[in-house]
Length: 516
Image (cartoon, rainbow, N blue to C red; front, side, top):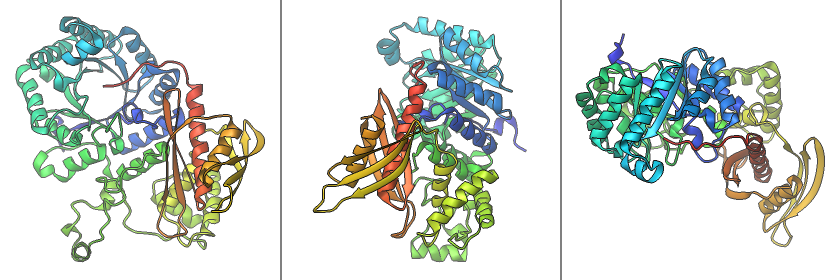
């Protein structure tokens, strides 16, 4: 059994910093579903959101605080009394609430953003910690942009906030500026120079602007940090955060080097990654470590030969250790409801009878046009039938005429606010015509930032998966849809994005800027 000094606490900020990825906004039900998965995964702390940012964020944090009982639930707040009060209102019903307050510490931020002196900021930091401490002893403080902060001033600030009552002090590499050796030395210097540092847990929060977030986090851990802030798949502001799965598996696989452990149930990593992808539509790149589609794929003949003889020749961890199933159960049109249900259980899904029936109907429809159904097909069906955001707009009928001698025309029926409407759209191609019809029927004309189509699985009968990114009033969202007909998939993706923007429109209150 590891001692407290050997334990690394995992602070997951997927629901807060991760949601700051463009297009990754989630509604309260989606946040709660992901929070339940994070609890199952075994994270120590869930940063549920930034309550003062909007009424929707406040409601999501409060919902998670009330529903999730086995994990600490943290709420972010600037070093401002109103922020801290609002954060506490959101998490006061949590089993183990944490207030996480922050303020900038670098001269760059003080001069150009806050326009305050070092003394002013230090006093505000201590006052914020003391105010939060009046609500709960579980208070975390972050000096934002710590890696570009004067070392003497940073040491003074860390000492002061610990004296004010901070039980955790987080050292953020907010802009991903640090190099591993440099960041490890910074953490070591804090331990050697801050006299009361033993009274708090030292945490790190690294961004990936130079691709070094995980490496910097590991360097900090080797220098004494015992909490790491990270996200599933490394999503987050700009280039993202330290990836939870990479960090955890590095510590687990190289325990001979680190001599440390986490409380993560690693067999739930892959399912957590897939759930996040379903909710946000942001899929990790195929060569992404641990959770990418090719992470446990071997094409080279030499590699295959070695694996057949002994898997340790080319795999430093087993697929099962992170929840990737090794056995491939082939599903097709002759498969029954029971077989499909068992396979979904193996994939980590627990569905009601009604949800299972809806998925099975779509499964049979797809099996009639595909020779083989893959896990990715089932993921897509689940997203379409079970986990889809509340719909104001719904596709009813689509017929497209196109060709090199025809004007591309899309005739469409949509359900809008419960009413069936019909119109036709025209364009330079079938997709352009389809989107034109949707814009007419929905009465919208939002900026289209991105449109992509990919085959979900191999073969000419593969489902097409379309991704559409729309922007309106400063909000960008990603919608996706899937269908064997890529034009239908494109229409579904566009309508899904419209529905996500509609949800954001309803959550128009608030607007405090989040970053750290």
